Length: 149
Image (cartoon, rainbow, N blue to C red; front, side):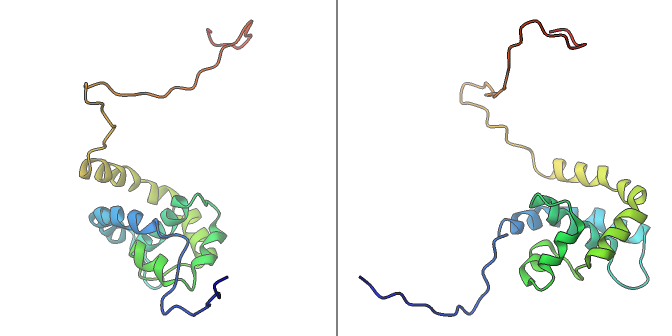
């Protein structure tokens, strides 16, 4: 049996390496995020674009809880991958998202439009020109729901 060698690496490993791809797409949102910061400037502290970037990073991991940002406080990769200048604390993230939800939501549609116009989606059209669709169906017998079955 071979001996097991344990050594310290000179770099950090991260379980969220996929955020680099999210950060790549967030670069296309730079003009929209700049307009957000111009429309809602902050005197000191975390910019609104950093709030949005931080929360999108959490959502990309399937986490919607504001306290989940605390897991990334000392992590350089999270900030670097998403282009975050100053990472907010969980109370700052919660308060800013609660206080400015309606103002921030005005910038969501331009963000979606920017993402969709920048990259055309590939739906995986087959060589014959057809589009494969996977649909889950179920059959009912004697359904009493208000919808026609």
